[in-house]
Length: 383
Image 1: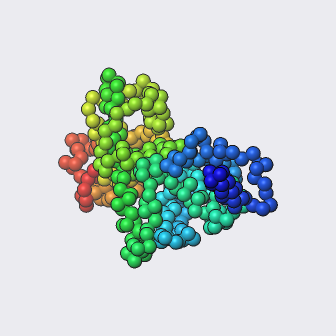
Image 2 (image 1 turned 180 degrees about the vertical axis):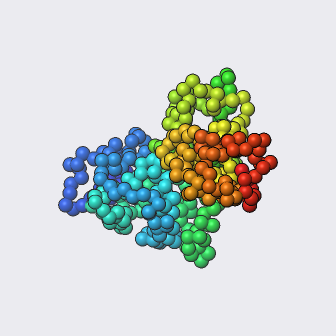
Image 3 (image 1 turned 135 degrees about the horizontal axis):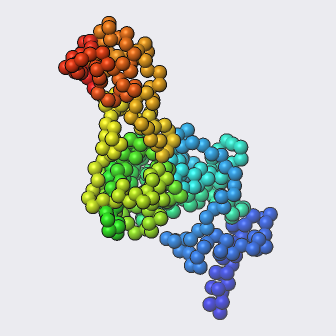
């Protein structure tokens, strides 16, 4: 008898719980909702709930460049046991460009403006439509999966500062310092050496910092449709500027990113060597060493913005098309021409307008050679 009473009580409690989640205007038993509506596995658990991906792909959204987004957004609508969260929005927007973009978080925006999460997600859990998570659930569904993927352990203090610690954490700067123990700094690699099974050269040296800083590539130039864990997996990455990676992917996957800029067909030795390669040297790799006038220029200044960079010839006139004896200030080369030579045409001394070649005096003088004889006054460092 007692067992039947306990069963009845438990059944009644479960019934009241289900009714509490439903809107009095809707009958969810008729909406064909089952476990698979929200979970992708048969046995969801607290640590692995197997939640389905929100259907954002077909929803219209507002796209905005990451550089134009706010640096930080303060999330303070759910302040209770914890203080506000200073969310580094721009950093996440930049990372999102390598994956799903704005719609990774924002959805249901038509022509704008971008709506706050609280515009649709209630701060209270007393909602009628179980298909729309409350604000707390929406935040956690967006954040936890990515953070767990690369940190492998997510606790409340990963993002939230307990109220007992708020006296020392009153702004974004202080919060970053507080989080430093939860978010180890991931250093951008300067050099990555890939070990391959190619017999004629098993080492491929990739200077990561050169491609970013010198060649002007952005993260999205190479990293697309990738998760945060590709670069930020704490169990695989170490805080070192130089890394060695053993290649396990197929040749087609490994070459795909490089071939968009480099001509790799029948040119294996360009990357594959028996030893670690030196950094890029313009003189060795192109046959034209950069002088003091070009050494500080960006690659795009001469080769254009479009990748891969176009090949140039070594004739200065190819870029400096308007050079002549009237428009060019010769003293910038370290040599101020005297009155006689300043009246000459450039090609009288620079044959075929080739300013990189050695200057010739034979057109006017016998037994004259530069710089033994100088057609003017030296006022600076000569090329």
